Length: 422
Image (cartoon, rainbow, N blue to C red):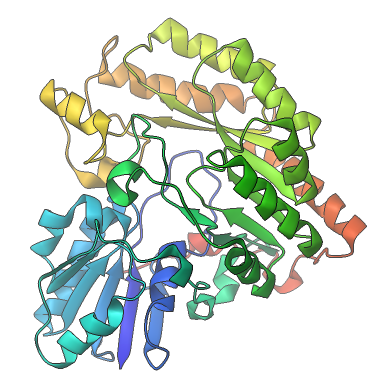
């Protein structure tokens, strides 16, 4: 059997450097397929979808809300050709009812241990319109290495520099943050993978730089310390979301190769200032993630927040505006208050205001969003700040003997700029 697996394109945030990471969801899904299934993977951010009949079934993997309309359009064209189309992924779960209108089948939940039955149903012409395993998650112990052989590796370079590989050492999250859908998608339960399984996956991959995409590395101190101890001999470098604010944990994280973290900067408190300093004390860089447009945000507050960011020596900053994604507390509250005025999912990229802020007009919040990007990067542009972070990791790799030089044949290429059609 052959599956054409498509990852629909989307428009990136204004101001972001254009590069692409190898998408995690399609590789994890592919690992859940039987070994004899042939996969043709197309990342539409990098290459065109050819609407030809060369596969038994078309799979569409969607992570972001901004991908869903494009995913539906692709599905409609293949279904008009008589092809069966099945959807999966995070944004499929967030937009399941709408997606069913464009699909022969919608798969909700985690795929491990489930796909043999789905493919058997397809072969018997009994494919169900819905497979819902969201509340019936597989044992975390059976999660194996992602099937990275599906990638065209050359695409995931930016000016000759190989992009990080994505890997997860745990699933789920015990927290329930206001704008986040993880509690809906994976339940409020921390589900760590067996450490030997996670470490094996990292050790086997042909890359020394990783993004640990776990929702939070601040949920279980002993598990974290055990994980980091096992990573130390691998001599890898990695970025991640927030790491537990504990000296023992941070020390081991640094030894294990923590390169930089994505840390939410949600106020101008001394706690945040000290939090950033502690990361830096252990040699860990910080990319601040700053969410604008919450109900306690006035125009003056946002400007003070941006001034604060310049004071605390962030290595990078990424600004977003609140996007009330379905199945989040933000969506429920703003919808109940009739403050959402735009449900064009193409605009739900966290860079466009789609609701009525409490203390200003939508247009003014949009202006402040651009003001934040421009002000933070006024003296040092984003490329220079990224170069400084990259230099830190290359210095570490030189000392460990693991440094890989840039690919000279790709040094002038940024594949995300390739024109896509259809």
